[in-house]
Amino acid sequence: MNYIFQLALILGVSFVGELLNAVLPFPIPASVYGLILLFLLLCSKIVKLEQVEQVAGFMISVMPIFFIEPTVGIMNSYGLVKGKIAALFIAAFLSFAAVLAVTGLTAQAIMKFKNKEKGREHESE
Image (cartoon, rainbow, N blue to C red; front, side, top):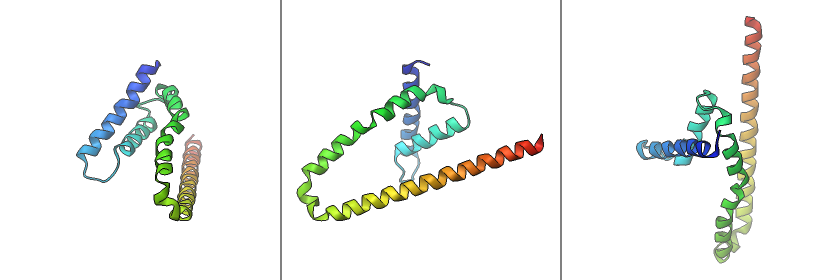
C-alpha cells in the first residue's frame, strides 16, 4: 500500500469521528470516536492492518513532537503552578498507574478470551 492511501484511510476514519462528535450528544472527543471506529474496523477485518501499518507506525514515532507545546506552556506558567508541583506529580503518577493497570487488565482479559475461543475451536474439530 502506498503512504497516501494509508494516510487517506486514517484521515477518513478521523473525519468520520469528527462527524460522530458533531451528531451524537455524548461528551466524548472526536479523536476517541475515531480510535474506536478504527479499532472496530481492524477487528472486523474491514480494514486490514497492512492497510494502515506503515503510516500509523510513522505517526507513533513522531508523537513526542506533539508534547513539546504543552510542556513549554507549563514552563511558561511556572508561576501559577509552582505551589502545586507536588500535587501535579502525585496526580500524574496516579493517572499513570491507573492507565497501566487498566491496560494490563484489558490485555489479560483479551488474551483469556482469545484462549477460550481457541479451546472451543479445538473441541469442535
